[in-house]
Length: 502
Image (cartoon, rainbow, N blue to C red):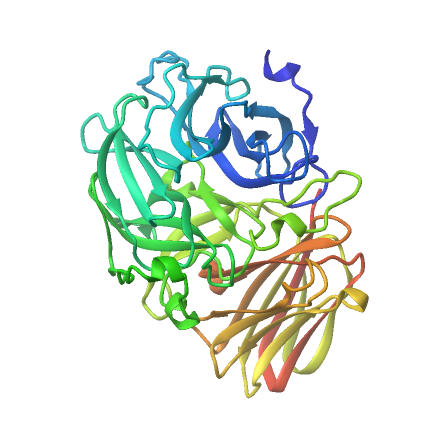
């Protein structure tokens, strides 16, 4: 079978995010850029819209905006489900599954059975469409029940280099590092954790090197750890640690506290404790994010699952397609020092929309309409400086679905997002919050996309992407939108609205 034999389906809705044509989807897997194509694999149930029969779905794109879905890539069977993992391009053919001229793609994934999880391998020699499970599986087995989610990358040791696998013992809240020369035989290197946020099991790690503000002489390693529950907004969340990696051991730049043993059982950390840690997203709907293999370091790109395990199985779906969930916008990652001097992970949407329609408001007192009826897919940019206003407020939506409110307070230096307790399911509404470093300035970039006729997504990038918040919100075909200065005047107010271009 060749790629042209497959019956691809182009994702038309949502407009800006990938969602499968039908059935259940969760974590992104095996993100890889190869021969001019972005490959997105993902946890997928080929038999229904419930979390079961987990396999790897598959989609490709040339621009990260428009996706063509293909037949499932790696299928579950009676002995194992195909849990999360990663794909590398084996350029040196170290595995022996291809040739130096035509290197194979090699997938490392978790083979999950009742009470047992181990790491297994599959390979493709046709560019990622047809996969063969390795006869020698599993390639790494600790004999435990929660050892999962391998992310593999090539480490440059100044010589020929070697492969490093980052995986987790989920219940122990440990990240385990192993090395290999051929992707088939693995040797233990070290472990990290438990440390920092431990209010849920650790999952879906990733690790990569980034230069701070583009300075290669000041590069750091970034370790991502998803946890569920225990996230900053409740339920699922993704922790971010900046540090050093010498090829064997990861060491955070600022060591995080080791939790008391009882905390691993009680799973209770306060909001103040959680806010002292690093997070890639302050919202409830950005989980299991991982990055693409095969891109240059300055193009490091992440995609995450845009959902939360608290309510993923209850999210309303489109009755005609019966798909559940979508992925976040693809996000280019970098490290930067914010205006307080702290090194932070910066995220920028990696797709484009149409031209901005710009409104220069100058000084603003009171409320003004931004748009009488926003389209299904839109980007809104708001910039301003505080005069004597207490806060700035953007209200989106109207009618039975209720309003979503984005509010930045000058005094508290925080952005709050309030979603109504309507849909997603009743009981998950309420307020989310994140701090900003420069309290006197407003710099929002808001992406909204209708996932179906009942659920939409909101992704807020503040302070040039230094702070990000992602939340599912009620959908409305005619979203009223207004901007207000509360308790005084805002200055240098500028609003730019851009619709989805295609």
